[in-house]
Length: 260
Figure 1: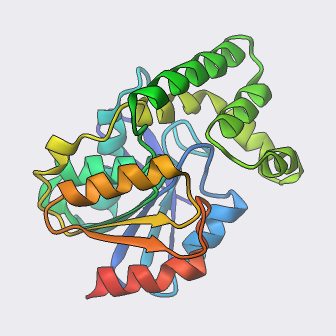
Figure 2 (figure 1 turned 90 degrees about the vertical axis):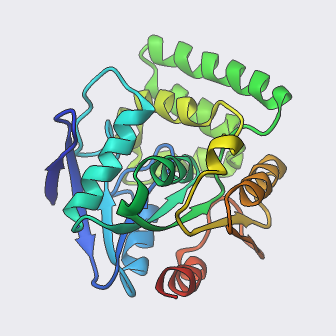
């Protein structure tokens, strides 16, 4: 394990796998770097890239200075880019894709290229309302100290299959997921609004936006709108994939876009 400090003094824990162009892997809600599914992703991508695989603040071995703000998470990404040598590619999944876009909008030429998979903003006013209700339910469970229920409520609320949620306690990383349940509020803060299309129109970083063919319709809508807004963005609908995209399917796409 390696560590670096973010601008506000938060310790960020990370590992580096592989060699080649630097790739900062920005995971989504409920993920941490030793969680088997995302660890497998990082090691798969490491076949072609130097993957900087870090715990977002409040997760795993990273710190969690308060109060939370989206700007602090962008500063975390900047700290990871600096650890990678000052310039890097970004790959973000779900709420991590939202952070990748924020970094592209705020960090300028420190970002070489950015790939977003299933950026998970809400897509219309109806979803804003339903997501607000979900946020209240999750926060109530957190306030009661019931992290397990908060995590399960969130995952079901965002459309995770019930069987997947039911099986999660059997995973070795379940206890860690439960411990990081308070960070669900961070992911909700990232994704509770409509995509920032006017700001995205000012992005100058080469961008690719990918959506899984079987991902929710709202994410398809968001992805297409962002692809239209970001100048020169490439858009791809990935056949056969849902929100939990396979790393072996994603690797050749990353390779083509980031190494071209």
